[in-house]
Image (tube, rainbow, N blue to C red):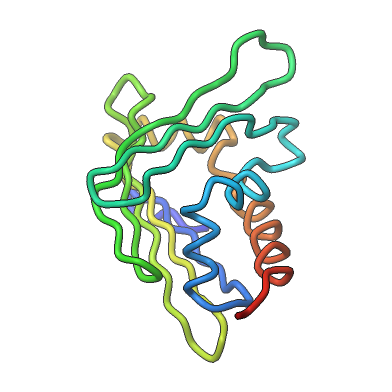
Length: 154
């Protein structure tokens, strides 16, 4: 994880599997539910709606210990190129939220993921870092790697 500017946070990780499977894990609700919620955060992804196409939308709802109502994250897909790139908005924030871009670059059966979160302001990125929400990626990607390892290669 690297803060590249006042507005951008970039996370890179190599996943041990082909880009098409890694892309599926980001775009199929039944797969996303298996890796997106970090276990150490104590939250559960209880609802996952994904229409992974340019112009499509998504909505994730998490059960959070100690709260009666689920926490929702939602937005729309600005660009979807299968097994190459996904760009989406994060619209739950008051400031308009961040825009996330993930790229999938396959080499020798492995996929380099580059996730870039661009925040609307320095204060918004500072707040995200301070809240700990940006620290989920290492654990999420460990779960993603395990999921991809278990998926059939056919």
